[in-house]
Length: 482
Image 1 (cartoon, rainbow, N blue to C red):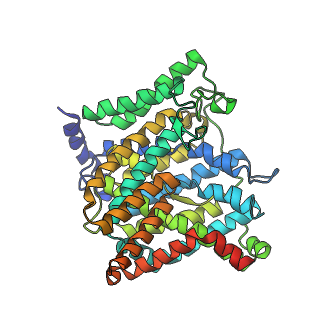
Image 2: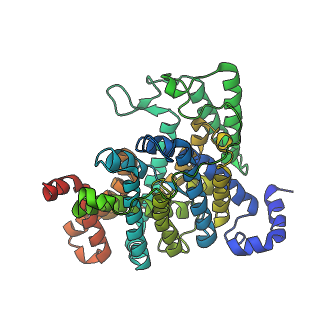
Image 3: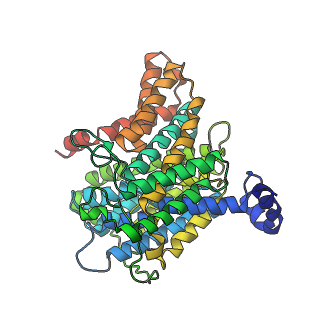
C-alpha cells in the first residue's frame, strides 16, 4: 500500500479537522500539512537568533529589553500570529518579525533618527494601524485585485529567485567578493565542511524529489542536520563569528547546557506611542511611517501571491481564498510587533518551503505557530538546525517557483518588460517591495507610451505614484525638511 493511500485512509479519523481546514477539499492530507508546517518552521527558525541580534543593538543598556527577552518576544508574537493565520484565514502562510523592517528600527529609527527603542516601536504600531484601516476600507484588497495577472506571476517568479538567493547567501555559498558584488564561497571556490553539508542536503532533496519521495524537503533538512552534528563532533568547525571563512554561517550544530530554558517577556508593552512626534515633528514622523508602511504593504502582497501560486490556491484572477482575512491578520502583525516590542511581524516568504512540501491549508500554519510557542521553552534545542541545512529548502523552492515563468507571455512587450524588471529587481535589490514597485511603475509608463492609458486600472495609477514617492523618499525628505 502506498503512502498516499495510507494517508487517505487516515482522513476519516480526523473528520472535524479535515472539515474545518478543508484538507481533503484542497487535495492534501494531515501528514502533509504537518510536514509542511515543520519545514516552514525550520526555514524560519533563524529569526529567533537574527531578530534579537539586530534589535539588541538598539536596546537600552539596562532594563528588561535583553537579548533573551527579544528572542522570547519574537517567538511568542510569531507563534500567535501564525496560528491566527491558520485558524482564521486557513492559509499556509506563517508570520514573524520582518527582516529589513527590524533593521530599519535598529539602524534608521534608533541609530539614525535618535529615537528610543520604545519610540521606534510606537511608529511600528502606527504603521500597522494605518494598514489595518486600509484593509478594513477594502483598499488593500482592491489594490491586490487591480494588479494584472501576468504581473502577479512575475512577482511569484521574482520571489523564487529572491529566496534562492537568500538561501545561497545564508549558507555562505555566495558572498560579497573582492571587487565583485558576489562570488562563489569565501575566495571564489567551495571549501569547508559547512558548504559540504549544504551541498549534501540540497542533492539529497533533489534525489528524493525526482524519486517522488513524500517529504523530500523535510528529509533533506533532517539528513543535512544529522550529518552536520556528526561533522561538528569530529571536526570541531568554528563559527563564522570566529573570523573563519569556512566556518558555520550561523548556528553551530552542537549542544551547550540545558535544552530547556524559561522565557523572559521584558519586551512586551515596551512602546511609546507619541514620543517620536514630540522629538522629530509630525511631518518627519509621517514620512517615516510612510516608508515603513509601503514596504510592509507590498511585501505581504507578493508573498501571498507566491504562496498561493505554489500551492495552486489562486482563483482565475490570481487571488487566494479568504484574501481579506489574510490581509487583516497581516495588518495586525505590525501592531502586535510594536506592542510586543519585537518590530513589525509580516508574512514570510519561507512559507513557500512548506507549500513545496505539500502544505495547502492553515493546519500547516498552526503547526508552525505551535513550534514557535514551543521554542519559548526549548529555544536552545529549536535553533540547532544550521543555516547550511535549512537553506536547502529555500534554494529548492526557488526552483519550484521559477516554473511559473511559463505563465508570462514574453511575446507581449507591454507585459514582458515589466515582468522582467519585477523578476530581476527582487534579488538584485534584495527587496520584494522594490521589485514590485519597479514592475508597477514600468508597466504604467509602457501603457502610457503605447497610448493605452485608459487600460490602466485607477488603483494602479495611485500605487505607481506612491512608489515614485517611495523611491524618491530621500530627496523629498531633504526638500521638505530643509
